[in-house]
Image 1 (cartoon, rainbow, N blue to C red):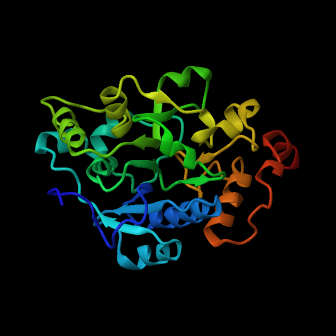
Image 2 (tube, rainbow, N blue to C red):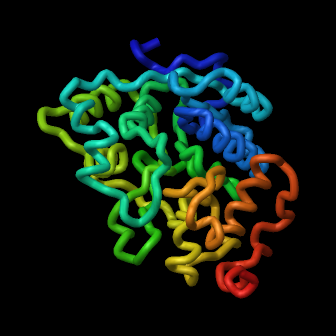
Length: 286
């Protein structure tokens, strides 16, 4: 095993895997809903849960229900200068979030742990999905997509199509790629404003654009309701405010929060996602 590579608790079963990252107990809760949704979609691919020292065994144990591979992953071996530049207070001060609320536990350096996926050469392809997301329809077809594939960061306007969102992406693990990433990531004076998203967009300038419905961000619900189509959504991503937390937008996002809770518990799962009410109908009810 390559030095620093994620250490999994058992051998792989498939040559393809979905992967997510858990850095604390809250994201472990999110991973439970995500893993259930992947299995509910009918996928038999491996599910790898990368986890850091910020989450304990008790929070991870419920994930065994879904046959996951738990893989301990450490922070990247970045320099003190890099770590200082990307500390929470500094990065949020230079690039404040004005559109929504990031959770208090958000730690920018954790985001770069995603890059360790490129060390997992036991897989031909890995589809990464953030733990604050749900798979609403089978997306195994993404294992046929090239590296690097990702959906655009659309949640406010069509102008967002020029930026990728790293909540869902397709990777081809290779140690050479990982080494090149580390060299580029921690170059002198490097500062990645949107952490892993900024870095991945620069590292893969010719990134392949996935359909927006492969990573539909929850703000589309109230910012661009005409774009919302339950029949087309493959992955629903709860960016900014999290469905497991109390927050100011809970009333506006109520139907999406209810759906997440159904996947968390396995109770009251909708028989037909396409039949769910859209934003306009929900607004009339509220």
